[in-house]
Length: 221
Ligand SMILES: *Cc1c(COP(=O)(O)O)cnc(C)c1O
Image 1 (cartoon, rainbow, N blue to C red):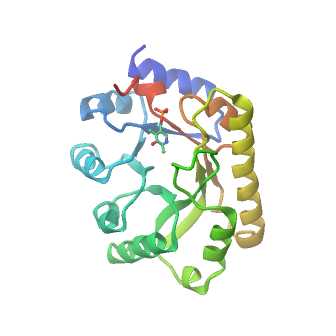
Image 2: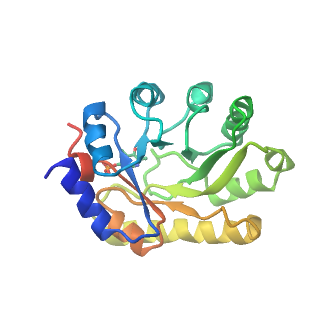
Image 3: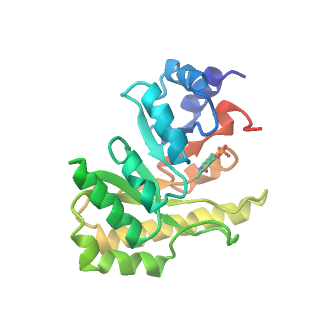
């Protein structure tokens, strides 16, 4: 199936309250233009260099999401245009994003990434670390970021029970943080979970944003 057919299929099956982030990493701009032709405007990338090149070549109306591990010294390269950073897992990174957002006179929305998988190779906070960050006055003084929700990646496995359990855990973390830190803030609302192989389970477990690459663009080779 073509990129367009895949996108139309996704748009037909995902609920209205779930946003589809088309993960275009490794794919050339010609392919991204096909997706744009099919009405897609939200794209996810995981490498700063690649993202910056594509952003320069493609239309300004595109909303770029950063979904990969972000080094502090590269924040300045994406701060002028990034719509959402999914992968924030330290106070030092929050602080750097705030600094660069301020320079650009912007407020940058972001998600806190949690470690929910059993693999220890994946980045992310645990619940206690997040609470420490959110409690601190230093964080509350960062006026140029907006913490909009949480993100997580399930274990790479065929075992649906494991995946479901991990997504339930992320949803639980979201609910607790919402209650303890964001009860007055309706903009803390996003749960970014689900990829090509597990988005169905993620949606059943309350995802508001799925990040789909190969399911739209085909295998990455
Ligand atoms: C690559 C990637 C995706 C998309 O993966 P697919 O399996 O191709 O859908 C989603 N999230 C993150 C963080 C990724 O790096």
